[in-house]
Length: 165
Ligand code: SF4
Image (tube, rainbow, N blue to C red; front, side, top):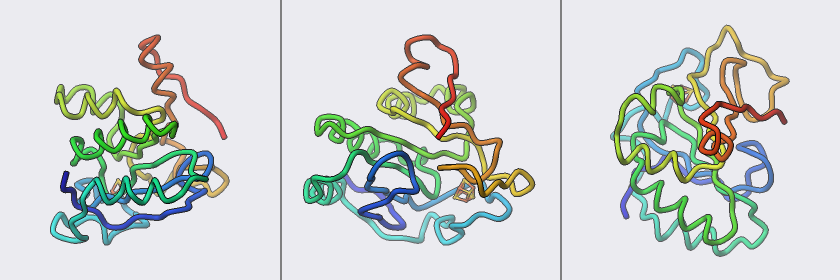
């Protein structure tokens, strides 16, 4: 399945817990002030990639513990990411995604493709980057408004439980 990406990092320890393959999607509508990845904003930037090639890269690295979707805004491309997430779970990997939307905003869209991706996530790091709330002491998030949400707990209880690292 084709998707548009800015790049891939094979051995990341900064985009979630453990050793991760991070997929940086291309295209972002949020334009957060102070964004660290402005090259990912234009939908026409980056390059086309096939999900099967990304899966092949995952299979080349037996040390991985998970995959992460970052960006850019991953939720602009929910269908290919859902495929990657399902395949990652089959391989025993956990799945994190970043988003500039809040979880509540994503749910309010009532978009079946977005809902399908949310169902496949173990962790969602949500909310835009807010420069005034920047905190370098935080792990896996840039500003304190962003939440590291346990999506398995959310599906069980319907309540947002945040994780601390
Ligand atoms: S959501 Fe992420 S990539 Fe998009 S503008 Fe904000 S910080 Fe940058």
